[in-house]
Image (cartoon, rainbow, N blue to C red; front, side, top):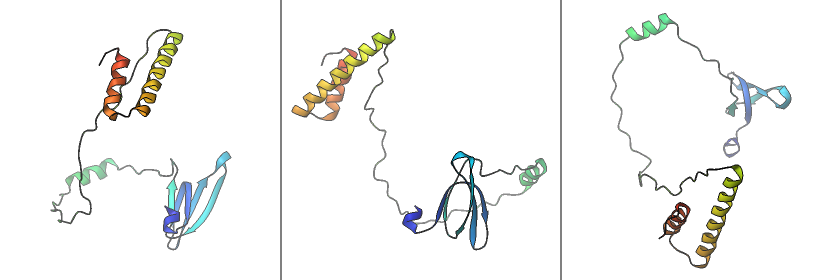
Length: 147
């Protein structure tokens, strides 16, 4: 993103000091080394976990905030810059197959399944069918069903 914007950047920042004309960043490098850099504003910065110490509200502050009235404001109507084209529940396209038995039995069953799928893929490349029909045929063959 920084390259597209033409801005300086720093990654793995653990401490950020914002000054009027620049940013002073402390970065964690490999091997536990620390690096301190100054970046001109504006800049892109990615923060490493632990770079932010949250402030927790006191009990008195929470009670005071609860006693204050909340102003209700109606939202302004704005023109949307996005358009919903389609909203749908996606079709399930695969099913998990659980293998039972010893490790050797599971490996044998998995090898058979992969060989069957490979034969179906080869057949599809020679005689293309709609994708959903092939998937249902593979699923039926995995379950031992006949079409």
